[in-house]
Image (cartoon, rainbow, N blue to C red; front, top):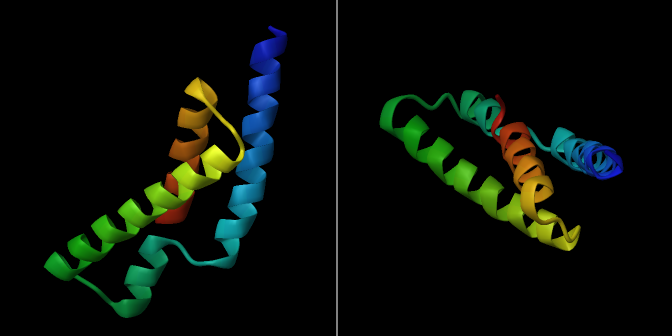
Length: 85
């Protein structure tokens, strides 16, 4: 039980730190809207943006020395926040 609470707190803290960093830059969806992309251009942009976000979030998780479920949860939330759910 203590481990679950500890992991939850780590994720919440890391999410807040990353969320704050992403809040300064706009999401992929917001950038696409600003550029008024549609069709194939939109799909290509979103795919590249999501790939870039995944790489950035993976590095961030490694910097925080996360592993297992904590890493998966952190990375999923990080990418979702960067792409713009």
